[in-house]
Every structure is written in C-alpha cells, then in structure tokens.
Image (cartoon, rainbow, N blue to C red):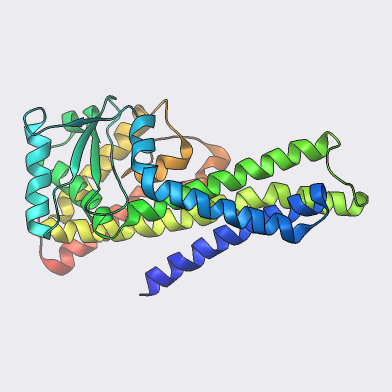
Length: 292
C-alpha cells in the first residue's frame, strides 16, 4: 500500500510539473497562466491514454523487436511458460530484439496484453537458471503492472522536457510577451529546472520498481542467487557492449541499464546500483534458504 501511494504521489508530482510548464507558457505567450495550465493538463491526459493503449507497440518498434513463436524460440518460450505456471500468470507474447547487447524487458498495459522481449545477446550469455531469473523479474513487472506505470512516467517526463525546451528556445529568440527582466529570468529558470525535476521523479519510480521486481521474481522461482549471477553478467555485458539505438526514456524498462555515460550521467541512472541489487538478493537467499 505504501509503495502504491508513493508511486501515485510521484505521478501527481509529474503532472504538477507539466501544469507548471503550462502555467509558464500561458503567462509568457498568451497572458493567461490558468488557460495554459488547463491545456497542459489536458495534454497530460491525452499522453496517458496513448501510453496506455500503444506503449508496447511503440517500444517494440523502437528496438525492432520481433514477436516469435514457440517453434522459433523453444528455449525462451519454455522458460517463460514455466514461470507463468508457477506464478499463475497468463502466457505473454515473446519477442526477440536483434542485438548482441545482453538485456531483456517487458511491456504492455496489463498481464493479458504483455510482451516479454529478450535480446539475442542475453540468450547467448546466460545459463537456463540465470535466464529464468531474468525472465521471472520481468514477469514480476507484468504481475504488478509496473510496465504500464513506467511507460506513462516516461511519456510525461519526455513531454515535460520537450515543452520546456521549446519554451526556452522561443524565449531566447524574443517570442512571447515579456514582463520585465526579473520575470523573464524566473521563467527561464523554471524552463530549465522543470525537466530536471521530471527526470528525477521518473527515475525514482523506476528504481523503486526494480528492487521490488528482483525480490518478487526471485521468490517466484526460488532462485535468488541465479538472478544475482545474471545481474552481474548483464552489467558487465552492457558495459562492454551498450545499446547504440533506442530512447533514454525507455531505458528504465530493461532489467539493467542499456545505456552508458560518465560524469553527471551517473546522477540520472534509471536503475539502482547492481551491487546493491545483488546484495539484497544474497540476503534474501540467506533468509529463505534458497541456495540456487
């Protein structure tokens, strides 16, 4: 209950930031900040609807993922089916992402419309037990509807960044109705800081969900150490061979961060540190007696 309330609060904050951008745009370009706020609230609703119905198709298309049958990928299909039987979940669609970067993600608005995608690289890298741990993590996301939550969060955060960037460029080149230098500076500060706040809130949602999916996925198959080993291998595999395509907004859907960066980028990691995730899984193994 606490986690659900916290996620709802984070969503409310994201929508609030989006309305602040609308307030600024309305004030600066129309002269009526309330109208701007209401327009941007309506836009947030439209984007949520698009995310709800089409997020899985957009994500699969962006990574060129292909839906496959049991005959085409029997190993992957059988492992997912085994997890579904244990967890009493419907069988999702299975997709393959044509890249040697080892990773996996799940998408879809609910458990009856879910897709679990694995890259070609992860099938080559992991043993069956390790792959089962990864796929159980993804099915935990499906069970808890995390994939829908994170997709909507990414959509709103991306829209905030786009709107703020457009406002910033217009204000720099003399667009809008100036209200004095002091007000102009405050508006510019809002345009710069709003996307940063939105990104931090989106990452808070993502990190919270990853810990929970690790825990539930490991218990689902009773193999916390197999998932811990898989996370270590995937972290090293993605460090050596990160994705070169795809959107940072959808990076939070993967089991480990598929993108890499140094310096300030470490502040905006979409996932908790792998070391902490492994430590939690090792602690879970000690507490439960599951040694796999």
